[in-house]
Image (cartoon, rainbow, N blue to C red; front, side, top):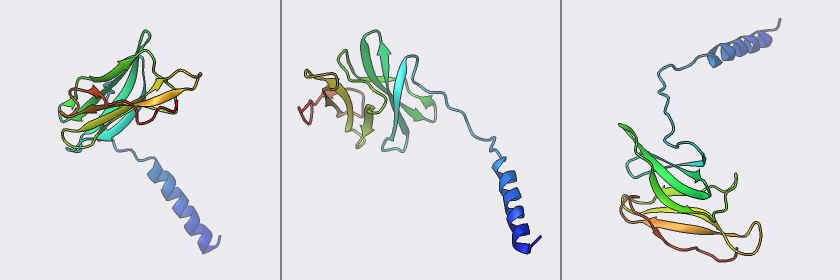
Length: 143
């Protein structure tokens, strides 16, 4: 066997052995989202803490919620918005985004008259770090 072929085989064997190594020190995190949830989205707040948002189905209502991960674990879910006229699909997911310590923004899709796929983006804003939310309308009305 040529020297180059031997080196190639040694490298392949080394990669195979190393690929089987597992770091057992990893901690498994359970999701704060409960049953009937979908569309997870991750962001980070000003402290570097993960913020996970998702939408939850409750009968005919869709609810946008989020939770923040701290040293103590996930916070209780906080509701951002709810509605019975949301456009929910696998490709376009709502999000909660901390912009500064106090200013947060969120968006979701709301159906509009005009057809099966007619919808607008709806905005919600918070000026107290995501605790309370207000409707900020839509940046467009083209459905």
